[in-house]
Image 1 (cartoon, rainbow, N blue to C red):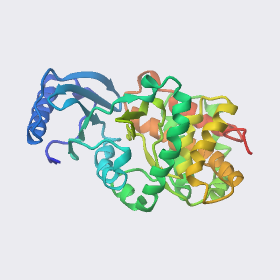
Image 2 (image 1 turned 180 degrees about the vertical axis):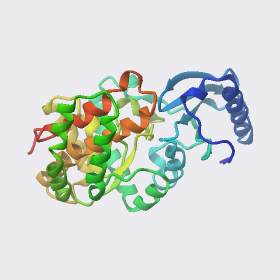
Image 3 (image 1 turned 90 degrees about the horizontal axis):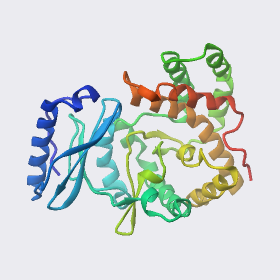
Length: 319
């Protein structure tokens, strides 16, 4: 592992400039050479988003990927040090990282469930218990996660985070009437925060079939730039959010297998629904920090997410 401390983290306005490309290419080749790896082709940049960019190149050790998160999500680079130590079987082993610049080099993760599985739903059924096991492995290390820069979204700070989320959506295109209706739910937010248990771990916050890879028959979870420290069950907000109730119930129950020793199933279900309802606060702020000053077509995403609090329940399944 090579760790270099040089220039500060940059952003989307810099990632496409020739000067930045020259700098990152030189750094990458140095890191690969230190590992006995040679780049075998051009470094290409298939994706540039407000929250980060990804570059890739063929090498003598296979395809590699260089990720450069923006300033608001650069904690992901340092987070990998915790992940690879505590739960190495479920994450990719970094080839190199630079905490100050926010550069992370990873090997190819294999094929995502979205691309490889004949039935992504069935594959996710099998994967979710492993994700729950990963969260339980990380749960005793919450302080290390926070120390790596992962934002605290646990229940005791969520009322404050709610206020931050409201302020954030006011800065974007919005409907005053809609925001007033959301603000009117603050007392309910405080009440439900008090009802949420104190279980905490890493919440991926964008877990879907595109962020789960099969590498040599092993499951690898990828793209931790949206993650927060929260009640672990809040992770199901994205996983289940676009499914019909019956399908969501099946996936929910497969995930809860990893926590079945903690409480009766009905209690776990109630906590999951509560965690996901409150999780929309964290998800709103994750959108906000990712979009920063260049929201593009996602400008209304924070408000659309926070508007979910206008529903009394997140998922109308309680059995």
